[in-house]
Image: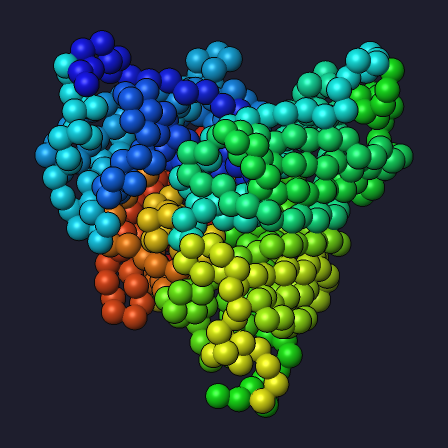
Length: 139
Length: 139
Length: 139
Length: 139
């Protein structure tokens, strides 16, 4: 398949769960990073393959580096939007950028970047198979 | 408001997150109970008031009892449906039933019940305010 | 091995993590059930085998039923004690009881019971192997 | 109090919980960051004040930036050691470094840094009170 028309980013929306808050009354900070993973899962599905299928084919994408800045705080029941952008495709990995906003007013909450490495079933780094790499390349 | 037409149950759907799986390859069991809370949040919103608003009005709904049976296992990326049903309204609390299914084939995963008690800002049991109780009664 | 001297219960202690609180200012309710699992892991290790070893031998113990009552609320940084008691051993499963208390004053927070079924690598119910069953029987 | 003898780092140890694993068979990546918070909570307590007390005095420490590198994977039941080191104290915040290792063999799992800003009850940045700042300064 080609991705000639593939957008360079993908948006997903969902509401903040009560379990995701902490006693400061806002979302506990590591939950934003779980949301980033929801964002990249949905990005990959939008390219035509689910990450679940990639794993069934024997390839995992493991986070190797992560940077994150916290600009604002999400609250329980807020509608959240995660915009996931493909930053880089390498022979053995992919890097994504994320912007997490409050959907109601576009308020910026978190910006983050994760570098992922492709690994085999034994956790060893391997080249991205062409079928997977193709999902992330211009057609 | 009246709820003459209010359905006795409410459905919400979402996908399983990677973070919710465990090394058995299925969803870790306590996550189903977080999903039940997503279900009752959405049930309450469908009745015309968000649980966030109820808390802002000074009333919390705290889980006092919980029973749960596990019938099947959800997997990463499965589309999940939580059906929340109002089981009972008491002067100081509400009981909900839940059926969690795999949306693709209707496979039953979990059935659960939670009893909630209404508490004030200091954690003391109080009667449900009429405005809140009204949400759960036939019109 | 024999367990002639095995205590019928086992205690484990740890502190409440910030991530475990919610915006009510107390521990989010499903976290108590994660603590119960910490309790049974430690119970099993005290009997002479780690649950990790049991899984490596091809047997999983999956929660099939769970009941829980919430009596009081734990707060961030509280020292928590989980007392795990063996309630029943069946050919295909084990049932544990738990009492979660605040260590400082013994205040009762949660009582719970979980029934576990033994499953093979494909998730099918199987008899507990004698070596595992023996861990839970009087010597 | 003075901290003339205060060590520049602090270690805490605990075991990996089953709930912290994912279907790759290792610890889900955001859990290491929850462990870092366990590390800094324990670091602060070792300096003579609990973070719970700091919050009761009206000051919160919110994560504003986070960087993290993943070097190896922790598994269920591994004994984990988090070494927390004070990196910098500023008028309105503190930065900590973390090294997460497997205690059995010292294998390095994660290195991370978090910048925290001090905020008041309304979430506004404020100067660290002298009593709190003193905890982190040489005597």
